[in-house]
Image 1 (cartoon, rainbow, N blue to C red):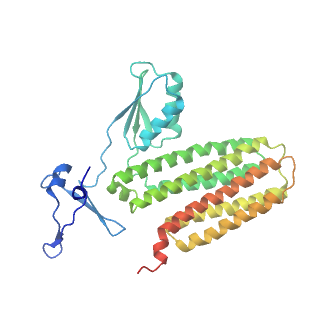
Image 2 (cartoon, helix red, strand yellow):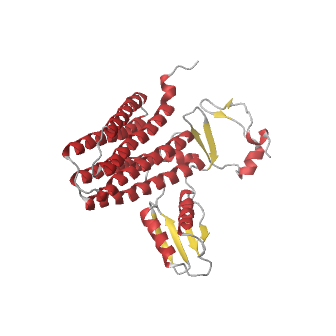
Image 3 (spheres, rainbow, N blue to C red):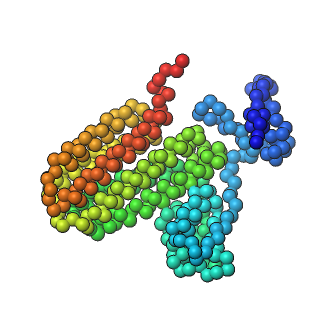
Length: 345
């Protein structure tokens, strides 16, 4: 067990010249980290009035190649979970090997579909009967976190609008295309989760992708999961259209469309409040979310039973859930900005 002296010490800062301050570092720490005289050190000024010091110039070091051994006893879901875990873990090269046994065709298809549908910036660079090698080609910060977040939320908002449009037009084929969009949202979600995990492990990378402090990683993880859930509900709206026995009445469609527009406005404004760190806007959106939930209750309780009433009730719930997940995003904004609106003593 490490002593406090091994992890925390207090050293006096001294002025050296007209514009430079120096501080001594414990020799034991330097030796343990393998730092030598003349090596470069990167210093980062954090938003929480602290500084981070680490060896090197702050460049991203490529992770080592990792090998995942699989067997015919493994389930497809188990293989899927482990490959995604390695992708999220930040590895640049993932080799899946069957240890001298031919990889079953269904496992090969699973891995290839996983790369194509779920893992952004990856390619299969080598493949034979006993192994498949996945290379992660996208290098941070080519696709910054903010850019990826914007694409993800725009796709999700568009999914919801198009699902409602397909419902309005009673168009099953259109709805099926909307459902397929969910894979793209999930791809960006996984990419951003990977980015957050790597940023927590590397302070320099955190700044490269546009995050200010470690707590941002925790907050944005919540945001990503909520956007994924909103996309799931948009897909559910589209999936249920094929179960409708006939088109919905124009009056009912108008009510659903109005509620949907309000829910999407809450979602988009919650993201706007997040990116701008706008506490005032967040509070306004919170009020609007409450109104959407209350309006959904009124429509639900006032609805009479008819052929498609079950489908409509599920759709109302999907719309309400979109607003409620936006509320979770708003809570993240309030948590991040609360110190800006209070007086500390």
